[in-house]
Image (cartoon, rainbow over all chains, first blue to last red; front, side, top):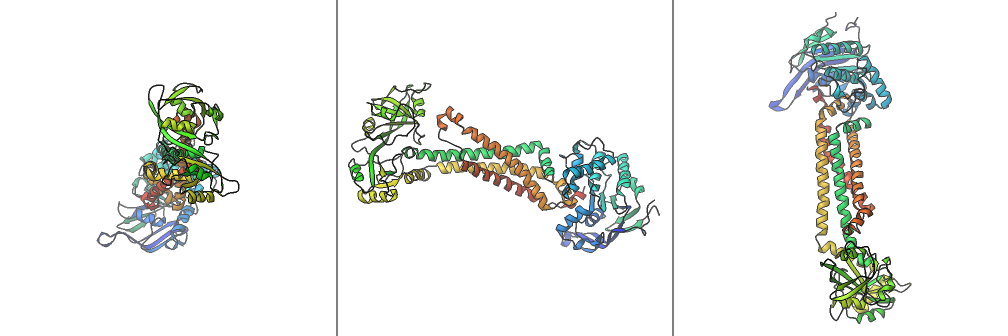
Length: 237
Length: 381
């Protein structure tokens, strides 16, 4: 049973976040003072139509983009105060990312792809690949760990991407349209795996999607439109 | 992350091979051309190099190279011998003549006339015969390449005769002379025979070879000779360099070889740069993903430089090996045209620096895309 929002730790919080692109007449206001929260042990969905600002918001939450105004806190730390170089280290230490297009390195095997964050953090290749192997087996890729990522199906590649995002035990997992490149069955399986493996005590999982077939997995659902979160639902409450 | 970088590179075999071949081709081109260039410069001074006994060369003041002598009066020899600090001085004749080969072709030959009495001026390595054989009537010594020109297919031997300007000459020795710049056939003979072979006129003395007396400074002796005789006197080292300088200043060789070397560098940069650029473009999403995960630009730069070093090292090794084969003694034995050309250690090192420049310059240009790519692009589908 999932804990309610009031009982769980807030891992990600933003308040009044604004972001625009371009200048002068070409300036486009993408985020218009939006608020957002993601809690530990929960799967938080960010949903809305294309162009509403979902991608921009998760880019800011993930420390990849900087906001123009507003508060952005992750694990109690204000991201705008973190330097660019420190931000890369902060992402490596605390974030896991699952991308819509997987973005695996095609020349690397599944285990090598999955071990990248650990290797980047300085772990030995052997230890990193052992950890990656464990995770890949849990994700149902036993027997595929030494295959090149280009030899895997879309669903299998997404599982490798999940392993890569979780192998270093991040505090925040950001999933960008994780089912967009998958069929319905594979997408459902991926969300089940995420719920089983990713949702843990101290970890917040943020899923950006407009795939209504997977809404059932949400503990909290933020509906976005025109650059702001209009309403938040907690289906399990 | 070195393993990741390496696997990324090797995973794209076509580009990996193209990169290695690009560097390898440039290395071979640069190595070969620079070595031939230095070999040609060496040939320009080969006659000077082969005269081991003398350390001073005296000549007409207008002479700038061993290959273009201007005749001196025979009386100058006595004047040079009379200069303080000169241990001995002997005449040295240099000219060119046409020699008819067994097949009927005319070959250009360098005729070198050495002092009849002392026989100073001949290289010290005799492959067949000996220096004393040059005292025999009509005796000449030829270099191995020259012998093969005169008698194609024949095993080297002494005793054969040739015609030099309608005069009979007998090969009594084969001498290991350094390959010369102006001709492949070099003929050593006594001074009086050499002047007879060429019929240049009354004044036949091309150079005077001299030796500084023990304890005398050769540079001071040359200055003294110049002062007393009005002739030009230089040390062997100076004359060697002057002969090389003459080639550099009066022929198109430096421009020609320099252009090819420059083309080697440009082609290398073009092949390596374009291939690396294509490699980066095709992997840009993956680079963006790595940046999003938290890998810094500097680390990606090191990864790419490692990739470049890897292909650069292999390409350089292959190119150097190909150049080494080209200049190997075995190949030189097959072709007299390649004798005297060597892969010098300095050229190998210099080419290595050029290869490093090629891969680093290409990498840095290609890496610009990686450094500026916005990691947020991975969220844009």
